[in-house]
Image (cartoon, rainbow, N blue to C red; front, side):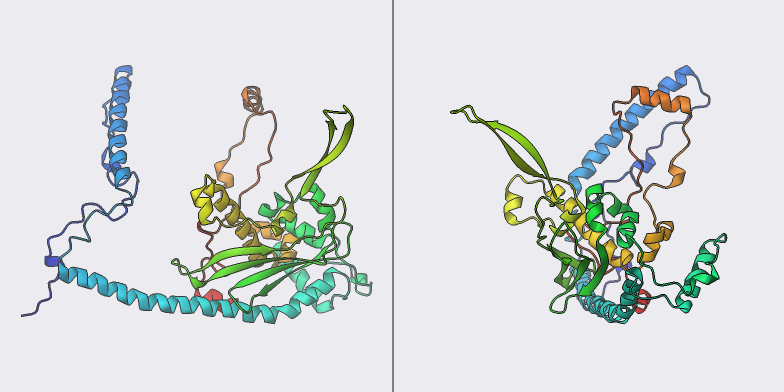
Length: 412
């Protein structure tokens, strides 16, 4: 007689799942409001009373569920030994499956490196055209015009006599491309624009000794800093994370060698001080940090054990890290490979914003005036769509993309 016990013959019911979620379903779904045959003032009062009772019941239910979150229900612990054995066996099978998944992710990273090397001559060609060093070929122009005509039925072809004219550089190409990106537009100030006009290229390279990548911002000589290249390096952890993606470890920036009085990450103010003994006054200049795109090269530090012990806003640190890593990923995955689309604005047609047009409705002038009259904030803010995604909490993200599949690896 076999000692195996079919699971369908085991009379077990899971009363509460592990890590009970706090949600309205399925318990709240069963607490429907009473229906009434008609609508009257008395019925409305009865509905209000019923609604208050229902809300009180929901509050009790949610309070009970909240107390169970993160706690074991005891269901798994009380399974029969043969069933527990099967559960442990599933864990063993999963270990082997995850090992293959991790190997797949590492091979995807190697594919990214391989295809980046294949693209480098094209990036160099792009740089030559942007800076006006090289003349576009008739074939390149013809292909480009076909793309433009496909995107815009009203596109007017270039005049034929332009073919023999000398090469022309594209002014402020990278500044325009960066400002077109919704997330970066919010951190590039007017003061930054003067320096970013000298940005002539953004390059991507992968690290050879450890998982990670480097962004290199190449500048022409300028009056702001001495560096020819500003770098930002993102390091992954050696092991693939629980989600099956490479997890970020930390970022390393460049020490910018600012020229005198040109540090765009600081604002200066003149203060008058009086000597208590001599009553003489003097003027001093104090610097304070200010918003700037170039703060990107001074990345936030991940929280340490001391930060967890001290009264430090860990959520604020995590938020800054997420924004920093998201900017790096967007530059790596979007702006570098599709720079001309950001320069022309075409890339915005393919961005998914959190707030869709259907979420908004037209406001009548009278209604708008009424809102303004009672508004406490007299300043108007331009509606800027939010970026589609951010890296997961805990500084984790995929090496290149959080949702990678084999077909995407082939196309890298």
